[in-house]
Image (cartoon, rainbow, N blue to C red; front, top):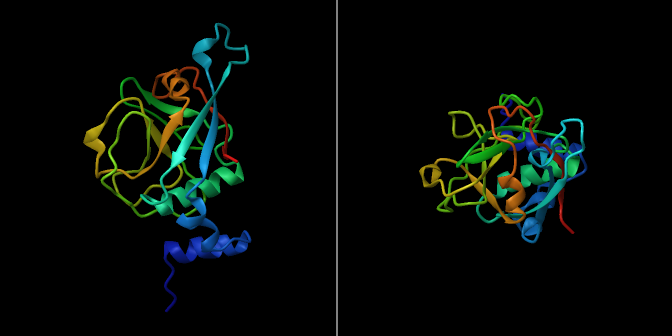
Length: 191
């Protein structure tokens, strides 16, 4: 009987892509950060006008959530997040993105990730993985907290934090979905 689990599928995918698990382990990700460029639609008066762009630097936490950091990093390297909107933005809480359908129901073709809950608190700028009610259903969607959200502690996986450019996340258009949603123009590993 053949037993296939998400680790086996991820390992096969990485092999197919010319990578090994050592290519994405926590040691190789320790010094990596993400740079995300986001639109600032709130700064425009005409929807046909090109909005300004804000640059956001994200520190990754591979020691806290190695599997989540590996998947987010792999997707960023593939350009998966480029052009994806912030589809759920709640004032005083968070901005959510990472769904290619823009509905909150989509994800990547990679397997879902098992939860990596930790003692890392949800504070302003924290990046957490979005998921369904099942704790092991995180895939590509994530959210950035506008403020402290301790009610999420131990319930969602923390995988990073905004260290520069939080003022640009603060300006992301609100709504579920917003009328004129901001989007990630690019999300890449920093040099």
